[in-house]
Image 1 (spheres, rainbow, N blue to C red):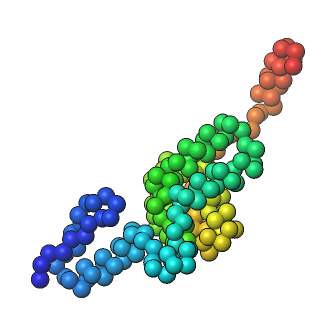
Image 2 (image 1 turned 90 degrees about the vertical axis):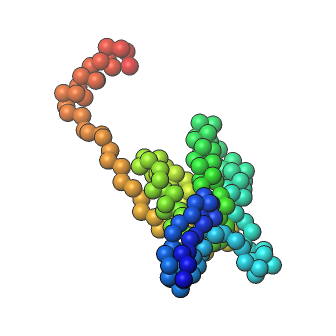
Image 3 (image 1 turned 45 degrees about the vertical axis):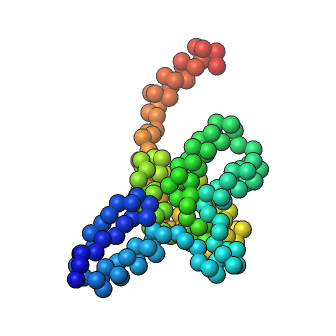
Length: 171
C-alpha cells in the first residue's frame, strides 16, 4: 500500500507509478522489456545476443562502406550520421532492436535529416538481416517522412534568358 516509482535505466529519472502494486508491476515489466537491453543466458551461451548496434555499425564502416568507393565528403557525412545512430541506439542488441526506440530516435531528428539518416540506418539494418544477425529490418517499418520539394519548372522565357546568357559567355 505504498507509492511506487520507476527509475529509467538510461536517464536515472524517477517516474511515478501510483499506489496500485499489481498495475505498477505490470508497467515495470513492460517498461523493462522496452528499455532494458540485457541479453539472456541463452543468448550469451548461443552467442546470438552479444552483438550490439554499436559493434555492427563499426563492422559496416570498416567492411561494407569501403567496397562502395564513396567520395570522401559522402563518407564524412555518413560518419556523422552513424555516430548519431551509435550514440542514441548503439547499446541495443542488433537482434532485439525494437521499433519504438528506433521510431523515437528518428522522430527526434529534424525532418530533412530524418530522411537521410533513416535511409542510411535502413541500409545498415539491411546488411544485418543479410548476415543473419536479425530477422527483420525494423527501420523499414518506420514511416518515411515527406519532404516538400521547392522545385518548379522553368517557363520558356526563363529558359531562353538562361540560354542567351550562356551563349554570351561562350558556353
